[in-house]
Image (cartoon, rainbow, N blue to C red; front, side, top):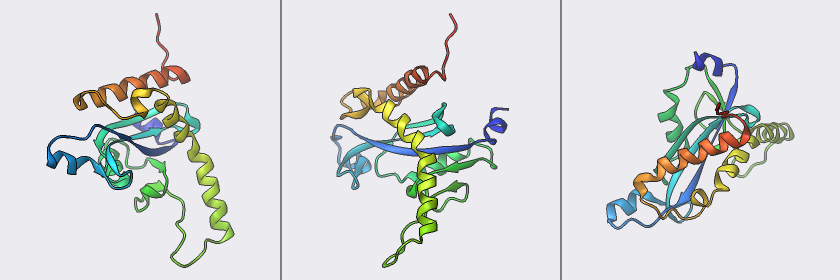
Length: 173
């Protein structure tokens, strides 16, 4: 039932990386080393409603080098096949995600393409705002020094607190 209700919306998806303590074992180091951030990182992905009204889905604690699109493809199976998404350039190549146009090599985007990219960015900004609200918590923004087995639990708790703060989660006493 919830899946059918969600198909009415175009959900916004984005991911972020958080540094973690350098693992001791070499294989573990290779698994978590992100060349993009030049650090050992954990990756989180948030899927939110338009206008940032609520967090629909959270993926926490995946290895940093895992690409955004592969992270999304694993999680997409839990959604209705008709569900539409809006993402950044990291999600290019997936049919169900609307992404901005990349500038061609040795070329320029037309003014219409630039305008469309601007419109997509303005509708996608709400997921960035929610990521910022998650990263207000120091444990979710600085190097994660706790036991890495507890990472997902900590991030999910923070997402619950963010949902409470934005009024999406109302507890009845």
